[in-house]
Length: 147
Image (cartoon, rainbow, N blue to C red; front, top):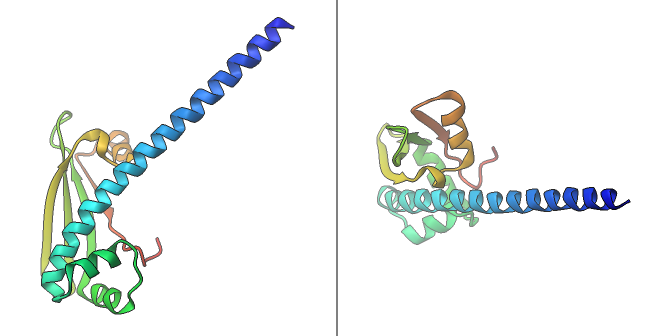
């Protein structure tokens, strides 16, 4: 009887520990994604304000999910494709993060920042580890576009 209670306590303890670990990991992943989205949205809003002659703050609001059909239409017409390219130069050290924008008029724009390994989204880290790639690319989707 005492062994059954002891085993139950161990199982419950492990379950709680796994649950807490999962929550902490999800919070960290969410923070990593927010940080990357923040940089991308800020960078893109600044660039688009020059290109489209629109208010940077209005563009930023739309890029963050605010509804404005006129601005989203202008953005959709101006941009052909956006992607994020993560480059891992060495096994240790920071990761280069490139935001690459291809405009419909044939022009392009790129911006770069760096990120620590643990600040990358989990999906990016997994691709680096699983396939041993030095470069990982992800398409950037606007909030009004369904994946």
